[in-house]
Image (cartoon, rainbow, N blue to C red; front, side, top):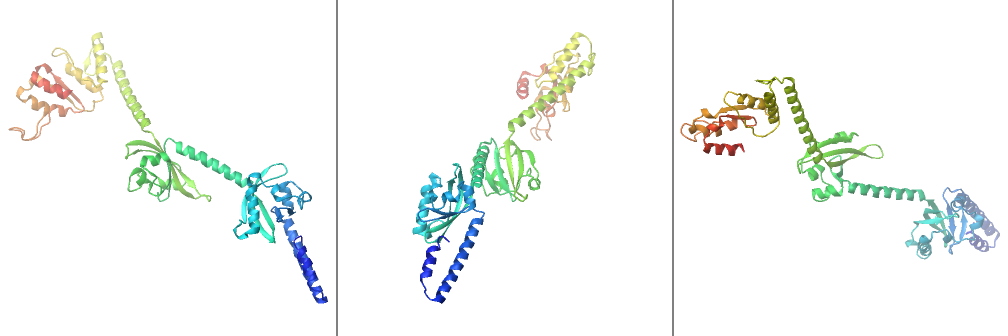
Length: 418
């Protein structure tokens, strides 16, 4: 009704005849019924609604708007301008839309967001849809989107936090689709591979491989599994720990894979060092136990005297080292037995033990006996021959009567041993 008043008066003056008067009365009754129907719909609407006049006076509000603003309709209708409730930072923009809608409706937005304040000073984010309903009078329907806006703010905050975490992660992070196409790379990974490679296969961009990596277990991840692995990257010859996890769609289907790579080369080196140390200590322990169990006998050596006990200790110490060893003693005192025990207790025990009596080798063939020769190197060299140094490779070479070797040959031999 309120905007039909003028139209109803004009209609009643337009005809004076009985038939025309009856027609006018019927038209008025129809208009009143439509107006009443509109009012009922307006009142029962689940969305806050408001009718605004040209001067921004609020001429009608429904119950939902009363609840939103905290004012009764008696306090508002015909008494308060719409601009009173608009948040000050949005007021100028809203007033500009209000004027433009009445001057140039085609270029005025029919929907926009602004903030409103209720009676208690609380601020709400509101989405507004406007329609011109009679001349310069407009109907506005409001949707309170405060919770949605807050959720968007929280989501953006979480995204910003996650972005900081991802970009400051000390390793590499990437996501790829089922066909291995990269969707995302963090900054560290992009720097390592020489630029953002999104859109290319992960095995090609990151590992320079034409086919998927042998350590990749895409099917397990697509099946919902979390895959952990360690591998040596052939590109930089460094060890990496990889954790691949599935990324799900809202319906629970796995869409893609996320992988986090951490350089563990230093850890691997330390682990190997500890393993080597453990192995060495275990061997040393076994050697010591064997000597303590039979101190009157040490391999093929027999003796319980303090002097022999000292010899046994020196043998154990020599076997535990990588140093060259010189053994002194008169002929027949067991120098070769000592050498064999050192070899037996060392890490080279499963490699050759080559004893050489230097005093029994003629000077003319000394060099070829130690260093070997190739077929055809001299007259009579009908085939390749390995020298003592080759035969003892990774094992032990025992040179008995070393002093019998000529000084010239000793120089060459010393060079080879060093």
